[in-house]
Amino acid sequence: MTYEHYLYDYLVESGITETMAKYINMIALLVMLIMIVFLIDFLVRKILVRFFIQFAVKTKNNFDNLLIKNKAPDYIAHIIPLIIALELIPYVFTDFPYFENMVEKGFQVFAIILTLWIVRSILHTLKNYFKTLPSLKDKPIDSYIQVFMIFAWTIGILSAIAIITGIEFIKFITTLGAASAVVILIFKDTILGFVASIQVAINDMVRISDWITFEKYGADGAVIEINLSTVKVQNFDKTITTIPTYALISDSFKNWRGMESSDGRRIKRALNIRLNSVHYLEAIELEKLKKIALISSYLTTKESDIETYNSKNNIDKELLLNGRNLTNIGVFRKYVETYIEHHSGINKDMTIMVRQLAPTTQGIPIEIYAFSSDKRWKNYEYIMADIFDHVIAAVPYFNLEIFELPTKIETH
Image 1 (cartoon, rainbow, N blue to C red):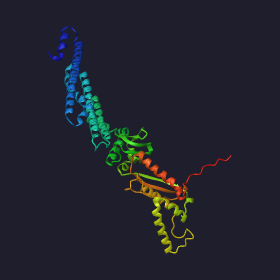
Image 2: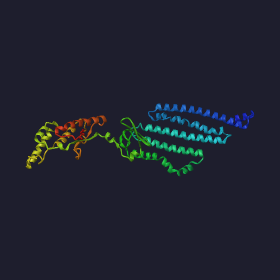
Image 3: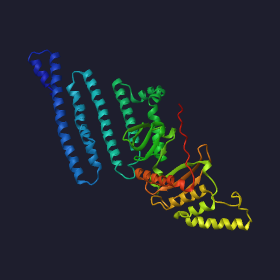
Image 4: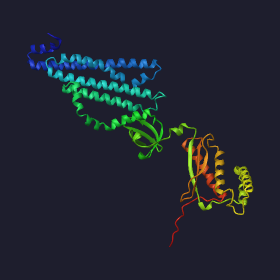
């Protein structure tokens, strides 16, 4: 008499049919197996989790704490009960080989799933840990983790199908290779995203927390997540824009990281001067402009140089067009440049330029090109507005006019 047939022999001796005795014996053994497995699973999890917690408290490294947070010890604890179950299944279904085969396959599939859970837990732990490292926290770690998980799940699912169907894994993979075109089509976005993630990381195109502007997708804000298929951008109005990862290499976008890491934020804005307000300066206008402190010494020096030149070359100055002369727009341009050079919000070590662009139908653009020392958006806008408030108000002092589109006159 064997242990697995103890109840069977007793039932047969009690007058129950052999078939019924076999089923009752199998059910009883199955209930015992379930109770044993659950009890061992409970005890192992308690012991293993407590051990991990005590170990994590003693160590300074954060990795073990993240393992506990991602439930790695809980999943690992299931391994011992699973092994015990696989060893005892032949005894439970000793009289039912078909059931034994089915249940064994079920447990083998569960073993694959458990392995995937453990792998996923460890990968998530690695992801969280890498994000705490200064050198890796701005890298697209999520993309690589997802790639590994997709690979692991693919292998796991294929292995499970091979076990259920009874086909050898190698033969199953070979058969699947014939359908590779369909697989590639199904995972097209994932493959494109994977390739894009590698290129983004290698070329250092985008990092977590970078400010990017992607007009095609309406994104203008900070990158908060980079994964295999999408890049999430939190716009300045707190909305979230999702961009396909492969769009970062297929389309054009603006990354403001260079500005944020530089010593200043660029100001590049122009105002248009009416063409018919530009003229040569007469002596009376020049004397009036000399009262402007920022350009007083400049005008005195410039006037002396011009008079010396014109006198040396016997220029007839009855007509202002002859010889060298100062224009109101030229003096205005010099004034604006000097004003910006003295402005407290401008970085003096970077390019400062006031230039005249090509005339258009809307006048002559006078462009200010400089860099604010404060790169914060609100302060940057304040500095730029402060400069143009002053410059716009200064235009009439030079007998210039700002171009404005004429308003329509209503006729009755």
